[in-house]
Image (tube, rainbow, N blue to C red; front, side):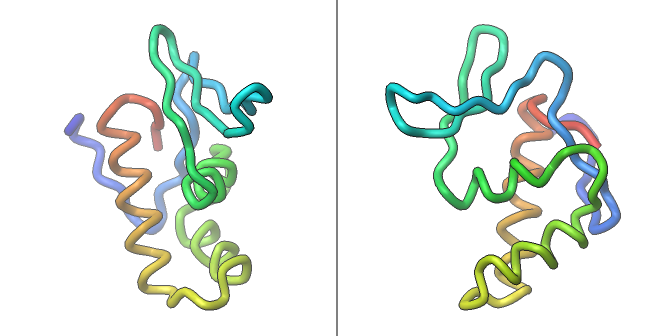
Length: 95
């Protein structure tokens, strides 16, 4: 862990030199980083694509609750927080 703890008011975005890209050959979204790549599933992409450095986690969670109405807000909040914290710990995102 790098010391940054994710909070509901955190405004996450990709770190410098990280790029969200669609791999046409594999039909999947990835985060491209120098010398590494992270493959995103549908839900991870839904989260990461909203982490643009302008919206806080509360707004991202609220928007995802409308996209995934069958999931509880608590479950969405837990998943969003865990994914964002994991990507911050890996240096892929910042707040």
